[in-house]
Length: 264
Image 1 (spheres, rainbow, N blue to C red):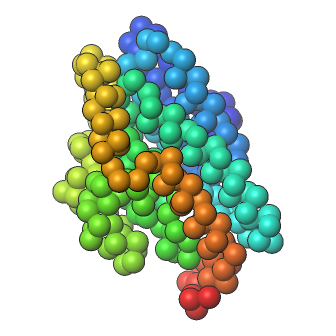
Image 2: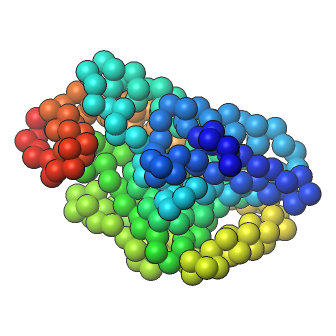
Image 3: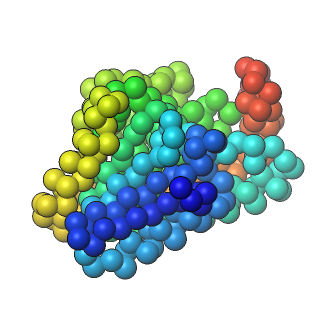
């Protein structure tokens, strides 16, 4: 398998594309290369007239563990530069994926945390392996959500449940995520790939332009456009990244200890 951080494969015969987050040793955590690779893959798929369905999945034992926190431990200016480079790629990728004239599926095995949760929420449907977990995770490093989590999550589960995930660090099992409306279907571990392929084939065989139009109508009915919301998230994250709590959260994460937040 290639060591590129993003693997993208398109089958013109079926119209099905698969984008795989490919940093399994880091639980597919996002660095600049992965963000830029996802942006490039999304833009390439936007040029495919035969596209019928897109599947997002992760290599190894996780869907995606969020941002690569090891890149956030430098001086504030360095952290801001890293965050901006990542969010430039991720925000553009999410907008491009949501604008495709094809349904978007997330196949979640293992953890969908932080921006991994954001990407799962950005999908039209989520198929979860029975051992999957869904968590917002940003609170654990004293940060705020990015990549659309605070836009998608309350729309999927309601503001009250979204607050539980952020303020109480609530992680959801696949069964709980199904009950909350994040997950559409659950598959056993030994049948996960077959179930994912079957769901993609089912959607690819349907009125895919109608599915995409439905998504755009739902997005357009929201009070705040996604593009504006993504930039609002960026501003909040960059502001938080200058705080003592963020520095403490990153230090605690890297030191494998519980951070002590002070509200500063």
